[in-house]
Image (cartoon, rainbow, N blue to C red):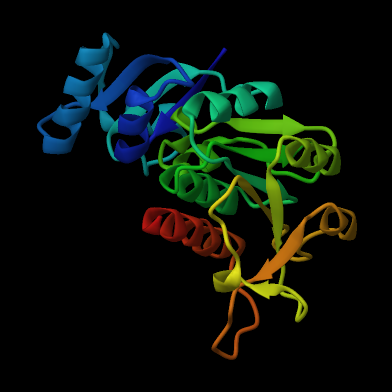
Length: 246
């Protein structure tokens, strides 16, 4: 079985990734600077390149928004939690995980994965239920992040939080409550995991109880909340900011 990834940036990242093996690259016929760069990357990786007319690529990708590049890769597979923990330990760095409690929009999930990879997260954990599956839309929105970033699916998110805490990881839930600590007042220097709730309801009460603390993004305007992917990006890059200062 295999999946298709399209878009120049997503295809280029997938050619360089370690988690999903590239199998075959389809490119639009004709000259194109960025397409030639992608073709060279495929050749370097030993991936066969097939030139196609635009209508053929449109049918293959089931969209005209492929930018002339479609890559066939191994089917997506979730990683195991133990493998993710091993990746952290082998890195020699401080733990940085993101857990998603009910993200169901594929564009949001893809954008969150892109930010998580860029922020240096060791991996992202999602529950088996109440979570968007990995689709072509998620792949496109993630801009190739899943070629580098482990995504773990678990049956019980609360139990996973307890396992992380047993490993010495501090768990912080993102919430808009008045009682939550402002994001910029929390020390993220140690081993940490951030937990993000669903787009509409936020964190479930059961998940809140398993967090070591709740943090809130300071809001200065009239709007009371941010899009889930934006909130996740702000929080993750506060972790990056603090760690780069040390």
